[in-house]
Image (cartoon, helix red, strand yellow):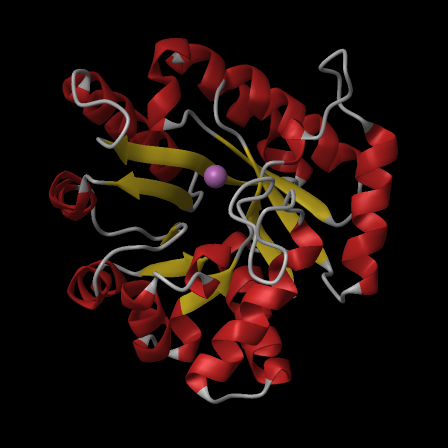
Length: 261
Ligand code: NI
């Protein structure tokens, strides 16, 4: 199984430095639970560089670089493009993300968010990389922008999917996958559970978004990529499938999208 979205750059010690001892431990937990690979996702420029550094240390960790809509202040297109240009050939940089719109936290800078989202879509297309999209309370605008830039030869994913079935149909039509976090296991998430029940096996992937959004039965504890299996088990039950089938197909979906070896 692959955790297609986590934030390993947040695994830090008291001095805010990457805690490699803790990361080693997380990699052991992953191996114990049959989680073969993880993709660590950038949120801002510094974080993207750290993500890339972590991916360089472990053969089964890959990274995405990008500016999250909550971090638009730190946006520097030239620097981001240089990071992509310098590292694209390593095979470790597998996507641009996470990028998108978030009107839950801020509505006052919508235009800035939209501009930066669009610039990063263009960058991804230029380097033929998939995009990892964050969408919160911004379904209309995100869909409009995604349509504007279609087609996507390298594809993409709507991460931490929490929209409707109707909206999912629209993005799947554009060639996107959706991915589920531990939120789907929460009792109040019946709308997401309906989407998970409905979605075709070749159109979704698994993720943790760790250290956030820990799945049941560990809700309340800090999340890590090894817990992705609990979300997958939950979805297997929802879809009335064997866990092995969810594992095989979502792993293939992720390998195909991110072109993992
Ligand atoms: Ni995230």
